[in-house]
Image: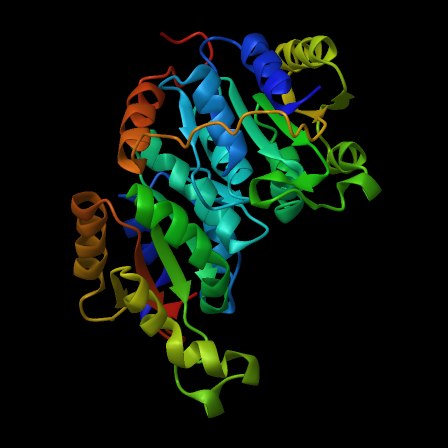
Amino acid sequence: MNREEAVQAILGAIPESAFIVTTTGLISREVFAQGDRDQNLYLLGSMGLASSIGLGLALLRPAAHVVVLEGDGSALMSLGVLPSIAAERPPRFTHVILDNEAYESTGNQSSISSRFDLSAVAGAAGYASSVAATTPGSLADSIREAGSQTGPCLVIAKVTLDASLRTPPRVSLSPAAIRDRFRLVFSNAASHPGAK
Amino acid sequence: MIEATEFWNQLKQHVSLFSGVPDSTFGRSYNALAEDPDVRFVPAVREDSALGIASAAAFAGERGAVVMQNSGIGNVVNALTSFNLVYNVPALLVIGWRGYLGADRDAPEHAVMGEKSAAILDVLGVPNAVLDESSWQAQVDDLIGRMDVEQSPVALFVPPGVLRA
């Protein structure tokens, strides 16, 4: 499974109303290219910050489904946030890590994730569940399963570096435009389960 | 001195989501804020994570604040420069200022940041003020106003000995 296939599987399996926070670099660009929508908060910079922003969003709107989509490098950069997320236990929070064992956005430099069990860390931190998927089908199933659970869930998508993939275009929206349209849909989301 | 309870109550008028990493400047009042049933307080493991959490409030049409020590300024620079200041996402930083009284009046690890704290925020373009006993309510209101109007992160420094924690 390559990056394109993984993102396609994820976007097809998350609820239509879910809010997504995407990490800097190719992951934001891939999501923008495949499925741009107002509910996507693309982080153009600030590597490592996606999970913290996602946690804040999830606590402010517990009825909303929040998905954080980041890479192994970004997750490793802010590993300490995993226990924060587990401690706060946002009810509908899916944390997806695209694990290609590399910093693809900066030129495929190796990360240490091949020698490190991210899934075990999430489990030890207290996530409600933590699974890894290696095919688009099992990834989509894992995302749907995580969406049906209560409490933060981690899904690791093991992806291969695929040199034949096109480089997705840069996110062509300004930061202000990303902010404004996300704020509009997020601030209007129901604050409590069952509320309209 | 300013009663810490009054200080937090003033902030609570404006801010609905707090996060942070403790500092001795706030003493026991930090716990009182974190455990206040009227406050949504999310303990963070690093100051940049606290800023990410608190910044989410801006997307809900609310205001977020981070309580931290000035040594954590080093940890928030990237979040400020590539998120808050680029997206114009406001947040209030409430920063205990260790080393404020000079290098010989505090522990050595606070000497450099103690001298440079406000200068760093000035360079970044983050409006900031040093809490003053005689005008603190106006200072808070002014910074909150700048947050709203400029859609910018802002900082309120709290020197030692100003809050009665």
